[in-house]
Length: 332
Ligand code: AMP
Ligand code: MG
Image (tube, rainbow, N blue to C red):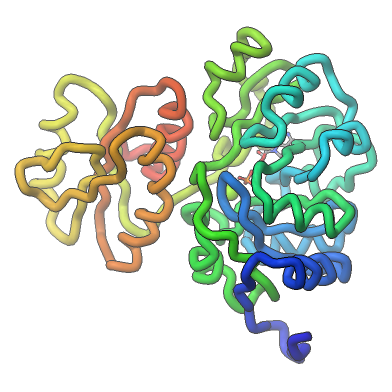
């Protein structure tokens, strides 16, 4: 066992995924601690969802506003009905997409208010990741887990990203390598029939299973991350060039008008020899790499990142949502 530290700052250890370390992390969680772990979307920062004191530590470590609810992660589909009232829509989605990057929002049962930001609903997801499932199994409770980054920063897709943000604030980071999807889950409100956040499963695939979905209902409380708060932003200023005929020219003009260190995120174009970072050959790769590249540009002290926008279809809707938020509305 690592030595207990007397002051509040602890030494954060990155642990390889193996049975011994899963047990170590499960013990930390059962004592009311918080642990970062990989999922197929991004790294999560987990606590026992039934322990309100532990859950508060997540908000403190991230600097996350307390009215922004957390998703509960389970390791077995049968756990959904222990913590929520299932609807026919949820049943269909669970059948097709669980485990996977899709969160169902349902009326809650037995879930502390601190997890749900005071809402009477709860978001539930089963990650499609060996390490996450092993940890949840070992804990024998659902783990509520937002992304394991400092609030407002790009989401972490490697153990190192988590360390860079949370070193000294949590005991352990389970390292399961780079996340496969690279952006967060799609959130479906299965009470009102609406997509609350675009994510790893495209709207089109969800609607193929449950039919046309609505837009989120108007509300004073945040129904989804990013609806109210700044999100996913690197230190560099992000400029998003929306799709359109003259996109290439807009990007070149914006680039040429800026002084300071700048880079263009592009899928294929070299923009006539300007400083271009190829983000991937297609939208799936762009989504997979975008947060890691934001962080890399910050490490290299870039002032500006100009991002090629993509069509808002399929995974492109989720990617554009993240790019719009990261740009803070700075769209050309
Ligand atoms: P993240 O910040 O990426 O961990 O995603 C968690 C997000 O899931 C929250 O910010 C919420 O917006 C959404 N979420 C969780 N629980 C609920 C809920 N009960 N109702 C609506 N959205 C929820
Ligand atoms: Mg997040």
